[in-house]
Length: 129
Image (cartoon, rainbow, N blue to C red; front, side, top):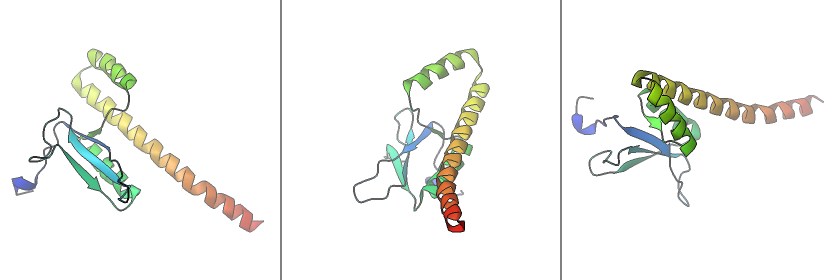
């Protein structure tokens, strides 16, 4: 933190899932600037990889808490946000975006937990029979 050359300003940064290469890691995410500016020095984006999907989710959650929001997924969502943003103040808009992202993260965790627990439960019931 003391050396400014290693610090990354978070203003205007967005996050998206990275594209896995043919023989590369699949747990990749990308940091980029929403206005097309360089993210760090001469780089338009920073591609980060992790060993597991859990680590990627942890990084995304940490970045979300720091104010780095995911890239918009659909035009409908953008239209809805423009309607909402015209009728609310910026602080309310940030709070709504934060809550929306937290709910999406929670639903991903629930889905992952269900995918993990159901097969274990089935095997447990089969073994007990």
